[in-house]
Length: 380
Ligand SMILES: Cc1cc2nc3c(=O)[nH]c(=O)nc-3n(C[C@H](O)[C@H](O)[C@H](O)COP(=O)(O)OP(=O)(O)OC[C@H]3O[C@@H](n4cnc5c(N)ncnc54)[C@H](O)[C@@H]3O)c2cc1C
Image (cartoon, rainbow, N blue to C red; front, side):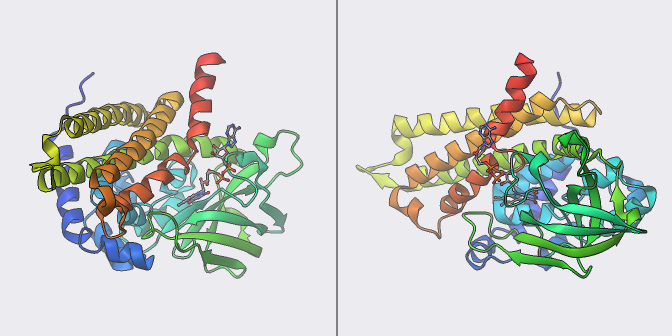
């Protein structure tokens, strides 16, 4: 298998790195400390063509693959996970619209997502329904030509800043199969009854908006149904196949940053009269990081390649997501260790990386869920 990137892909990487280093690096600490979501930075990322690069040209995108989206993700996260997440998750849900939306829905929303005129989010998790998505209780009841929606969603990325939320909810609550009760419905966030409360002081990625969302008698047209009624669970799995390689790319970017900070510090910091880098144990740590990063990257390249070939390999994608989260937390931990007491201080980049890494083992399928998927593919 040839993993050589094309010149165009290498140019995308270079452009993403230059943009992130120029625009994110100096603001990352401030945004983290202030829980600040920056609309200007999001729009600037859209102007540069980084948001929704996988969206078809017919809808204003570049018509590239999910690999290119992952390449940008890796570069952004290598500079700052919080800002990287904030700007790139502006298209979180475009995958669902591309796969299952009507032509009218795609035409209405996707060009605005690409150009920085609208932001979207996807709401699945509820206070009592996380890993087990089929226990979600948010209900959309048909009433004439409308859906009337009630429920609460938890930890929703972009909940307070999005223009639209793709809502995973029950539309057929009496269906005997739990898997056939759900659909996606598009909810404009300016609809009366939509409420969002920001969850501040997260452990990490604080520049990204996360909210508790409430829906109280929210009325939207029946035409806002996305995809096939009752097929929402299966559509969600198809969505995760597109987004989980992106999380793996986030982990590789973060681990790269941890290694770069470790190398810099190990060369600068002297103890016992020599730089830390001269101790073999330090060298071994760096060697391990480099190897883990390479392995995780190859895994996500292969996983996202199956997506771009139109044949997503569910188990391989789960492996890539789980493994990148694991090595990102490991590399961030070693990076803090190498920084000693300095790593324990909030101002240090490695401190921010350490706090951010944990989310990779939680969102979009906790690591246990990923292992369940992998095991099922081997044992069923
Ligand atoms: C910053 C952030 C952003 C997020 N953004 C979004 C978003 O935009 N949209 C959205 O819908 N959700 C979002 N989430 C929610 C996220 O996807 C969930 O937190 C995640 O799916 C886990 O669900 P939970 O928190 O309810 O944990 P639970 O499901 O309660 O799990 C708790 C623990 O139990 C383990 N566990 C659960 N079931 C099993 C089992 N059968 N076997 C073994 N172990 C098990 C889990 O692996 C986990 O370790 C976000 C979360 C965070 C932190």
